Image 1: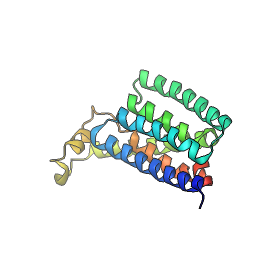
Image 2: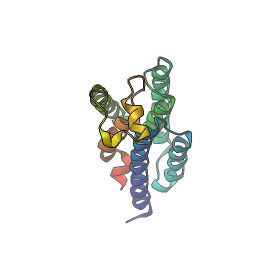
Image 3: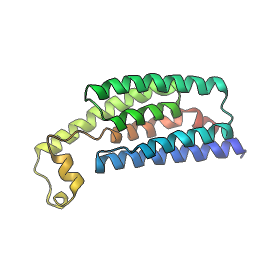
Length: 170
């Protein structure tokens, strides 16, 4: 195993874990922290030279992420997603690259719709007794609360990661 292979494998596991953590944190707190998003950005920059990404690939990844960030902030401005969701989706696209971005966005939309339906159904039912003392479940059960979009983004990330350059190099 070369240094590039090891770095790509480490990056892949780090990114997958951070994505799952972001989804879980969003579910429990309805927040995706700037520290987490910045950590993903810094890790991306640190792993780049170790895996030998070229300037052209980095440029395309960056341009795609900026385009998605613009679209995500429009969704944020209209109240469809949170600011943390917008930043997380952009940094995810930076990591995964333009080749699989449309697939990622498609999976995110599908998982987002399914998750929204599950949450709406959850809100129509009485809150189970074993969740009554959990602040996050009470918040999620409240009709006025939003839907933690980090959860479907995490599922979409895990589904798309095997198709990325990172997986090819690992």
